[in-house]
View 1 (cartoon, one colour):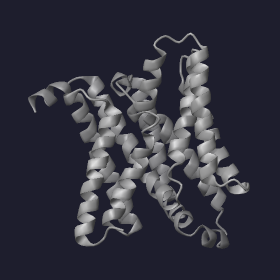
View 2: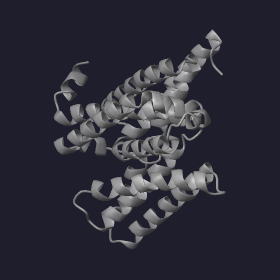
View 3: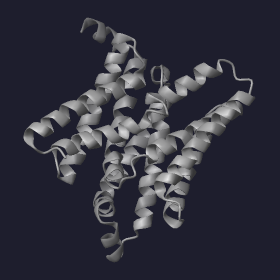
Length: 278
C-alpha cells in the first residue's frame, strides 16, 4: 500500500487511471448492444483500421496523429456498416476483409519508411505498452471530453439503442430510422477504439468491448442490469489492471485483458452455480 500511495503521487499514474477507467466505461456500454447484435468484432476490425491510419500518420510525421486516425476510423465504421448491410457480402466478412487489409497495408507502409525501431513501434501499437503512462494533460482532457460525449449520447438515446438492439425490424416498422442509430453506434465505437489504442493496443481492444458484456450476461438476463453490471465490471477490471501493471511492471494492455479474463471466469462460475449462465 505504501508503494501504491507513492506511485499515486505522480501525475502520469493518475492520468493513466483516469483515461483507463473512462475508456473501459465507454467500451462496456457500447459492448452490450454490439454483443447482442452479433457485431462485437467490429471493434477488432476498426482497431486494425486505426492501426493502418496510425502507420500513415507516423510516416507523414504528423504532429497530432488524431487528426488522421479519428476521421479514417470513423469512415471505416461507416463503410463496414453500409457495405455489410447493402451488399451480398455479410457483415463479418466485411470486417475481416477491411481489418486484414488495413493491418497489412499499415505494416507495409511503415516498412517502406525510414522509421527507427520499427519492430518496437509496431509491437507497442498492437499490444499496448507504456504509452498510457506517458499521456499529456491535453491527451487526458481529450479523452475526458470524448468520453463524456459518448456517455451523454448513450444516455439520451438509450431506449432507441435498446430497440435497435433487440428487434430492429419492429423498430423500423414503428417508424424509427434504424440505419441512423446503427450508424451512431458504429461512429461511437470508432471514437472509443481510437481512444483505447493507447491503453491496450489495437489487437486487444475487442477485449474491452466483449468481456464486460458477456461476463454480465452470465449473471443477468435483464438489459438494464447487464448494462449497469458491465460498466461496473469494466471499471473495476481496468483500475485493477493498471494498478497491477504499475506495481508488477507488466504490460498495461495485456494485464487489463488478463484481469478481464479472470473476472469472466469468476462470473461464469457464479452463473453456473446459480443456474443463470447460458
